[in-house]
Image (cartoon, rainbow, N blue to C red; front, side):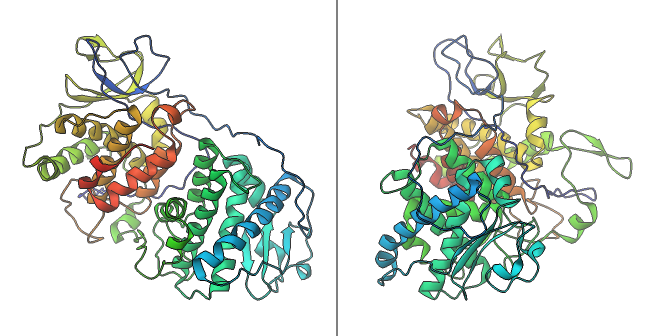
Length: 500
């Protein structure tokens, strides 16, 4: 993130493969402390609602064994990733045979130029598209239009994605490449970034078909879907890249959004993609950001000139207060924002009180009666900071989202509903921090976003969570969707978001 000072810092952190956890809850009822947020252990009082904080990186093993696919993979090493790829190819051919005529009005011509698995020992002369150096083709998957063929790296890329994000992510990568095959058949002519986002959208449309469970060789649960989305996020452009770069694929925020749009609205929506629709959220680093580099610190530190530099744990709250003082009257019918009290960063061994009772089971929460946000400043939030400063900022933003609901008098009928509203309001704040001028010295809400910040917000909501959170607070997939709605459309739409 950026702040208006000579020591302002930027964000440029790529998504680590680790799974993480989320942060939202609903107001407690009865006479217990009205705490909402992150729970550390199993609750002893059912009036206190929150979420486990232990992160998980587990993947779900396949639940079905489809019959062997009738697909020849040239150069296969016989590994599981190639079996998954072959199953995906057969499924994708069938899906597009049905879907392509609906979208484009013409029969679908199956991809017929062959399917190639490559590794460092592959003779490049056996590969499509005139590959002359196999080393240059590794760590990649691609569709070759002249040969109408698909190739992928069976040594590094696919096994690494499967290990980090689950086996189904291998199939999603192939679905993206099939998106390029569809573009070739439909003769789509758009800038590279639009073609790449459209391919993500087409992949999302196929995954929705898998999720429906009809005529597919795969089964899918919410964890696998979240992990696949995290896999897409990991393949984003480096922060600071521009959408008009001839190799641009889109930021993580863009790519996840395109995939979700295909999943929600189908391949017909994807076919509408053109310049300006969607509009990529990519911007370069400012000149000063490029010089200073790095994140805002988590806590206060000392700058190069010896002066103290405030961290995200202070500046995010200043920004949130400034934003909601301005934005709240527009969604409340003119009522002013009632500021929260100062946040409390605490050690898990010394929790603060809420309504006179120690908050022992939570690590990130909104204390409703005492009107403050509490956060574990020693373990939980520093762990989230590993994703970058705006991962932490987003988690703080979700707690303010809960406070906004409380001040508006909104009554959620489930914890999932309250969580999604909070995520959307956090996104609305994030959207207000997007830079209008890259080298501006003053920001209307204390802070400004740097390249990669929105990706960090998506990352933390998608994967900083435990198994039980998907049932209690909703899958990461829907949390990201709510966050993106706030970023793109503002706080006015948040109260209309409905839990699935």
